[in-house]
Image (tube, rainbow, N blue to C red):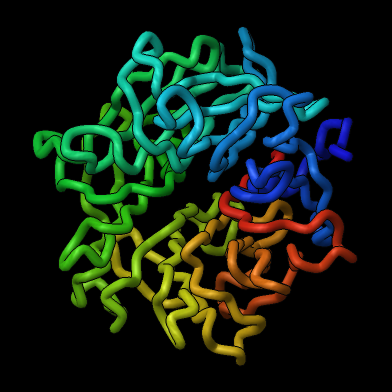
Length: 361
């Protein structure tokens, strides 16, 4: 049965693309000790509109003039025509409503495959700010960064990744994070959006972009450029998820990226990117000396662990019976521990293909 109380602060949110009723997806709440509970079953019509392929999740903070707090989930194949959707999940009941249907032109520019969501705001803000990255929207299907109105769901294009006037072109932008920077933390300019792209850069090895709030893109790190750090020997490796270390972390301001199918036995690696775009490998998920192994990180996600100077890394194909696993990684040493095995029923409801991660602040 789904949980019926708001997840406490520090809870981990995991969206599973194929768990739940009729394999329509499931939202889990996970404790800091790795215990899982189902919060919303995206195939249960009793909880609202069904999902198709939910893939990313973020907490929506309450703001001064509304709307209230909630949980946002992107679904790459939901909505009209399968163009995608953003769901809002009630934080008390798990009930779902559609905030933005990416196949409905009356709600703004059409999308194609929303795959990442970023939320900003607090009680001193009038309204929340919501950004969604769509991997295939825009000119020639090279991806688009949207801003979505938290009250109406209306979409506005911030950056079309095929628009050269906005900067270096993209190829498959697939994840999003917020980088306030020092000036941003002081309430001044300096805020940027960090986006990982799985097919941009030299030889389409992938890249990480810094994007201003008006949509101008700067190529921060080219994963095919050996002058910026290691280039993996597997030409099919690609960045899949990005996070920025919080100000209280020993790694404050550094960018961390999962590189799928890279490293030993193509199990995937966790990479740190400095302010000048230089890459270093933090943890090779194929190296057993660093802890439990991953399974490639193709369905990889990462967030910073609340209250601990550690990174949570999720692999949708790792764990018992390849049903997913959640790791905690030391960002300095790269040592990994297994926090939650989605195939182990002793840790709660089992998963199938966990795809996205978020936190309740």
